[in-house]
Image (cartoon, rainbow, N blue to C red; front, side, top):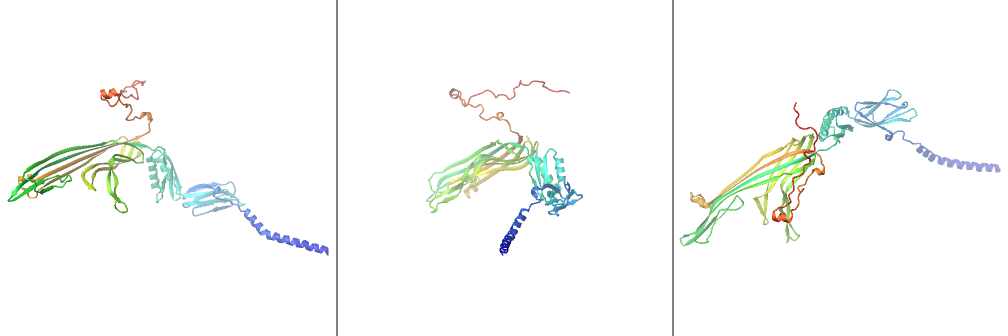
Length: 469
């Protein structure tokens, strides 16, 4: 009986243990399955292979091939010709990957395939046209990217234009070519302007009185310059009993000369600016406080003078594409206006803009920019100014003639950097005079000898002269 009881207890213990084991078995089995998950193939271990559309590559594998996986057969395909040789063929533009497995399901090799346009013809054409340039042509999706280095901007642009034409089909070409040495261009500009002004006036001012019965009538006529901004003043008034006449005759001639010679340096493809002149304040409305009791005029500044903007592009050694814009402006009393008691002068402007191709050291002249303006007016007392002979006493004639001629000379140079010791400053050799020199001789600076020659005349050794055949 005891044995039976013990046997029953042992059986019960075994049953509980079996039940616990059965309850723990599913979780343990799941953990075992999760632990056994492994990535047999992926992009991290794949080799990148570029392919052109309709092109193929032959692959020799180290083990026998049992299975092949192609992610997107519409992009690329794989053909097995033997147990260890495969052909990968580009079908359409895009990206995919191909994996090869052995009989045990182990990955033999993996390839990340990028199918692009066939660019061998583009590479060959660029290589033939620019043999000294190191330009690479790569396909990126539907587009093409140019990389590497070129000697100058012209080679880079020509390679880009050639690739754009050969690729066709509206494909985008990205130019990432690095120019090895970007040229710098020095621009020497001379802006010369001569303006001639001629002003004439001839008229008579009368002042006096005469009796008409018991009435005394005084008169005063003044004829001013209407074309120069004033208004004729013709009127009668009672002022006295004397008669006086004033002859107004004037002939004025003036010449204005503007000369600027700026020198600017800019990298090929960049823009340089030059401005020599000033700014004039011009009223631009008023600003008042909240109550409107205090108002202050607003002022804006307008530039005037000689302005130069140029953009050089070095096409090849000695050839420069140059875009030049020059402007000459000056203040003028003609057409001036008065705002809030302040006279604002007008600004006369002459502007020229052009794009040319010119050799290094060659000069370009933008001339023939001539402007001529003539104003003439006759004013006087109505009726009396029309009388024969005597009408000249009651009228005035004004005549203004303005002539302006502008010439711009441009000379570009391809330049290189030089040592500091080869440059000079305007104040080199300048020194203040001593008191005796300034007081007794009237000198403003000390006088030195001539500048030293950079290359002495007697340091050359060897034959020299002419060679006659």
